[in-house]
Amino acid sequence: RKEVEQDPGPFNVPEGATVAFNCTYSNSASQSFFWYRQDCRKEPKLLMSVYSSGNEDGRFTAQLNRASQYISLLIRDSKLSDSATYLCVVISGGGADGLTFGKGTHLIIQP
Amino acid sequence: DAGVIQSPRHEVTEMGQEVTLRCKPISGHDYLFWYRQTMMRGLELLIYFNNNVPIDDSGMPEDRFSAKMPNASFSTLKIQPSEPRDSAVYFCASSFPLGEQFFGPGTRLTVL
Image (tube, rainbow over the protein chains, first blue to last red):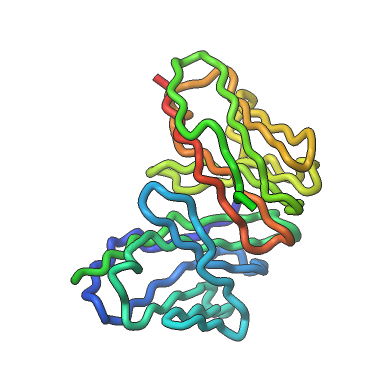
């Protein structure tokens, strides 16, 4: 299975700041991309899909850079409740073949 | 809908024992996934089903692991015999169509 890599962090960010992190993937044939959020000792939950044209949902923006093979997640005006681990998901084949989760980036928003 | 249901939530067993984890997907979802999560390896896809048929089991670590989906509303993941290195959180997830996956709360397995 091809690799999906994330900086594990932790990213310590003051409340109200903007933070961004990336997820790189090695399989250039990858087709679908997602960001999930996982709180401590909880299950992952979908945060947003990543489209070729980019995707914005409130304070969150996801981008895909196919040339450099990475996806990014930008969080503006960060809140204490944004503290979590953010997992990227890459699907490289048809169906769910080649579905790979990154190990996650741990984000801590500090008051 | 109650969401994806997993049981048990916690399991403590001794090495060599058989462990069976259970999952009830969200009604109407035709994809079901089994994952294992550890600190060292992160979240790993073990196997997934489409319309009750196993599609990709390349993530199953070895023959001690087996998974079944006898009908659209039930799946099991079995480990026989269990080993301490199997200790992890096991998640079941379902989706329809393939896209957003809804995860169950997980089963925290400890093998002594």
